[in-house]
Amino acid sequence: MTHRAGPLVIIGGHEDKEGERQILKEVARHVQGAKLVVATVASHEPEGYFDAYRAGFEGLGVGELVELYVDTRADAQDEATLAILDDARGVFFSGGDQLRISSQIGDTPVERRIREIWRSGGVVAGTSAGASAVSDTMLVKGPSAESHRVGDVQMAPGMGLLRDVVVDQHFAERGRIGRLLGVVAESPRVLGIGIDEDTAAVIQGDAFTVIGSGAVYVVDAEGATHSNIAEAQPHSTLSIFDVRLHVLSQGDRFDLTRRRPLADPAPGAAET
Amino acid sequence: MTHRAGPLVIIGGHEDKEGERQILKEVARHVQGAKLVVATVASHEPEGYFDAYRAGFEGLGVGELVELYVDTRADAQDEATLAILDDARGVFFSGGDQLRISSQIGDTPVERRIREIWRSGGVVAGTSAGASAVSDTMLVKGPSAESHRVGDVQMAPGMGLLRDVVVDQHFAERGRIGRLLGVVAESPRVLGIGIDEDTAAVIQGDAFTVIGSGAVYVVDAEGATHSNIAEAQPHSTLSIFDVRLHVLSQGDRFDLTRRRPLADPAPGAAET
Image (cartoon, rainbow over all chains, first blue to last red; front, side, top):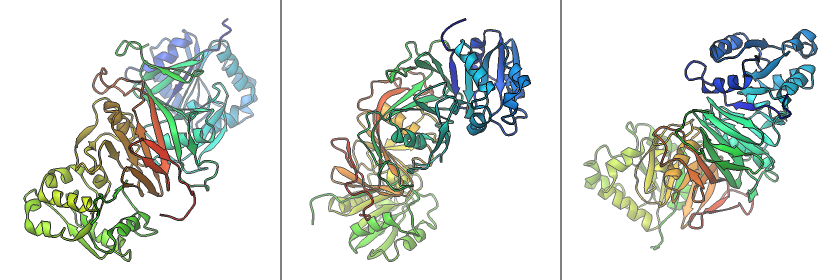
C-alpha cells in the first residue's frame, strides 16, 4: 500500500469514447487491471451513461467495470451500495449536476470510502459535473457566453479532494472565462482552472499534466491590481486588472504550489 | 478646425437602439448637430440596416443622417458617392463582413475622404464588422467557442485608423478569447481588444474609455514567457503562458501607449 494519494483526472466533458480514447486510456492505466467504479450519481436520469462507458473502456485493460448509482442519501448509507466499492482501484464520476454529487453522497459512507480508495493510491476521475465536484469549493451555476456580472455565480462546497482551485468545464466551448474570472475576483487565493471538452488535467502530487485535444486555462488573480467586485452594485459588469492567464495544451504541466506552468519538454512526442 | 484626429467609437455589435441608447448617444454627441453618414458597405444585403439606425438615432440631435452604400469598387470612385460625405462630421460603419469594407473602399477616394473627416476631428464609429475594420490589421475569420488551433485565424489589412491593436467583437457572447489569444501569440507587440455586445471602447488620443453594458477585454502577450505558436504543427492547440488580461467595464480607461488600465474614478456615476 502506498501512502501517497492517487491521481485525479479532471475532464472538461465530452471525452472521446470511440476513437483514440486518450483520456479513458489514462484513467484505465491507473486502475492497473483492477476494478473501476463508474459513479453516475450526478445524473437525474442515469440510463445510458454506464453503457456508454462500458463501451468506451472496452479493451483498455480494466479488470472489472461496475456502476454506482445513488438516488437518495439513504442509498449512500446502504451496505449493498458500499459493497460496490469493495476492492475498487478507481472511481469515475460522469456528468450531470454537481449538486447531486455533493448533496447525495457528501459526508456519507460512500464518500468516505471513495476518499479512502483515492488516499490509498486509487484514481478518482470526473468529467463535466464530476470534474467540478472534486474541488473544495465547486462552481455550481453561472451564465456562459457573457461577461461576469457581480454576484451572478453560485458556488457550493465540493468533495474537497483538490484544494485552493475552482474547476470549470466545457470551457472554451461554452465561453466560460467570464464566470471563472468572477470566481477568482472574489477569492484571488483560489486558482481558476478551466478545462475544454475532450481535455483533462491529470493531477499527481502538486502538479498536473494536460492531455487531450483542447486546452486547460489557468486564471490567476493573485497579482490583480484592481477589481470592482466588492464595491460594485449587484449585476454590474465585472472589472478586474492584471489577471495572469496561462493556456496549456497536451504535454504542458502546471505546478499548483508555485502557481507556475512548465512547457511540454517534448512537443509532438507520443502520448503519456 | 482642430488638428487632432476625432474619436473612434469601437462597438462590439448589437448596441442598444431602443432603450437608453448609451452608445448611439455617445456617437451623436461627437457629431455636434452636423451630418452623420451610416456606411452599410460591410453588408451584402444592406436593406433594413439604415432604417434601424434612422430609428436608433431619432431624437439624439444628429443634424442629418444619410446612408453610404458601395456595392463595387467602381462605386467608391464615383463623384456622387463621394458627395454623400460632404460636410459630414461622422461616419458609422454597420456590421456584416469586414472584408467587404476593406475590399470595396480600401485605398479609394471614399476611404480617403473618411480619413480626412476623422483627421479633422470627426468621429468614426464601427460596430461588429465595422469595429474590426478600423485597425491596421483586422481579424477576419476564426472559430468561436473553442480554444485556438495554430494557424486557424485569418487576418487582413484594415483601414489603419487604429495602430498596433487587433479588435474582436461579440466577444463574450461568442466565446472568442481563444482566437484573440491566437492573434497576440503570433504578434505579442499587438494588443488584443475584445469587445462585448452593447459595449464600446471610445478612443480619444492614446486612451480609450469603456461605455455600455458589457466588458472590454485587453489581452497583452508582451510578457508571455512561452508559446508553441512557432514550432507546433498546424491545428495543434495553442499553448501560451503569462498573458496579462484586463477586464474593463463602464467608466474604466486604458492607456494604449503605456498598455495600462485605469479604474473608473467614480463608479456608479452618471454615464459620460
